[in-house]
Image 1: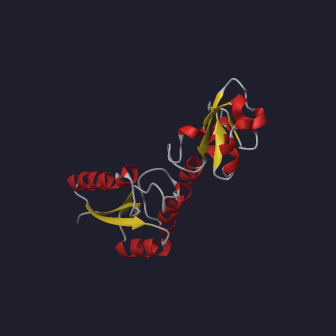
Image 2: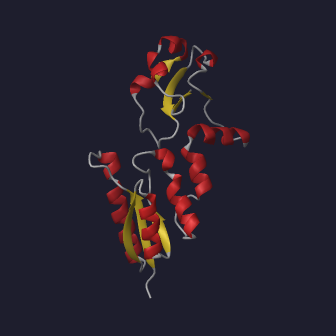
Image 3: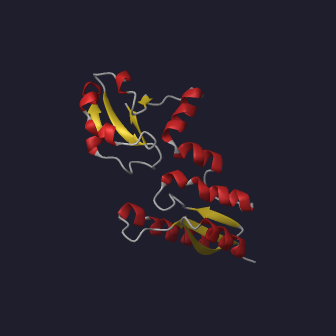
Length: 181
């Protein structure tokens, strides 16, 4: 009897750009590779209707989930929901476990853990800590909770000496952005 695998991925928004649409290439590659290994596959999207996702997983009862979820409704801070659901349902899955997913999704939390464990990481500051910046260094404002460079803009690069004259900092939420050297 063939083993059955759910290939889980984030639902793509109707106005998705190329960086979001590439999930379909990843899904196809996973399906092809799993088929070559003798598995049957079934696609399953996740969005904010988490109950529907849980119900479908319970109905399908896969042997494991090939997890390609990159965000939920384009919100990286919800990324760990998918793995938490697999854990809750006791379904094995590929990729990083929930604790690691939660920790690494929040850049400032991940940096605190790295520093606490002796792992070098670039200095970082909260948006209200511009007085601590070295005037001779270059800094960038980054999203705390988004993967990679999503939300990054060249307008968010500045010299420490320019921090007080950098109006964009005052417009951004300290819950969602931080400063990194």
